[in-house]
Length: 479
Image (tube, rainbow, N blue to C red):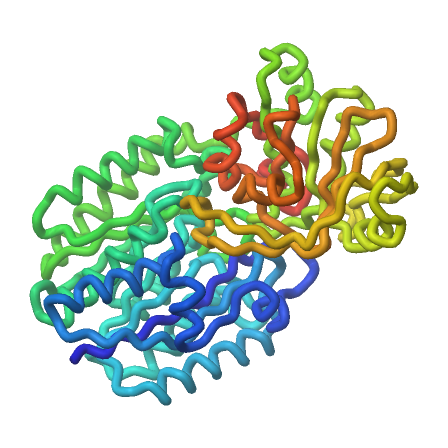
């Protein structure tokens, strides 16, 4: 009987965000232990779901006992508080100790976590887990392609496998891949050897959609390498430019079956491919003024404005007002913007559906994302903010909660606002539909992201414009 542990600790840390991420932020987002992990994530599109499903499938041919330990995830935000990371790591080590013996450990990491005490937070906590296990126990981890890979992460793991898509639609598949590699390693069918390369390269966030030609060439090369029978896995990592740490940047990983020479050769090949085409990876930035000019000239079909400076999935505030303010000034619409504003939601709840109230919306988190909108609105509806997304979407999660939410219409203006009491990444159209909003009714949809919203919003939008707005996730690297 092979006892294989399942573990996850995921955070994308934006060092330009002042607010620290506490243990409470993990507990409020996703914090599961034992069988609860299987219940909540077993059927999800997350890599944890892939771990669980993969081990169950492989158990038909090999006696396997999955051992779910825990998974903790917090919505991207500022660096993890030192005491929060200490608490999480201590608890993880205690769970590993309590559930020994373990023959292997499958881990969902992110790769762009930063803490106050450990700038390479993933390298630190993976090393702590590695030290808690006997040396012969393989540790195989998945990574987000926005990982800022470090040598410490590589040293701590037997194999690292990154998602191959952005938007991230293959998380479950990568979990399945990791489970297969784990069982093949434990049964002696393969002997993984890993090589990594770290070219001195930053890929602008605007250039990080894997379906677009400037990136597709590198993933096509990676796919060609996989045709070699000795290549077990490979990854192209794009990096996370909002973590101001030494490790920030692109990287490449190749894992072979007992062939270190081939692993190094192919890792060099991937890194050289990125470097030789580096000029294609410089951001093509469109200002807010230019974006709205484009909107006025393109066909009347729905267009999605991607608010790069307030990219919630990159840790931003979710209450940026620059685009909403410009839409009001130009009276462009009908338009829809989602804004996080706990106080505004409470005011709408107090006033009740149908009431007309004056609000100061958004712009409360910091001084980076625009001043509050001064608006008179009519409260159209109130909602509990919970919704489900059955389709594979960026993030891999099925169940969401954006807290009590209010849909309001700005009086005498073609602008609708969805106000939420929790920061919510725009991964799913169900965020809107669950609140009675029909996305197709709008000429302009604003999504606070860069690439993550594409998978959902392309169902209703024919055109996307990535807007270089100010903010803690501004796409202009010189800022």
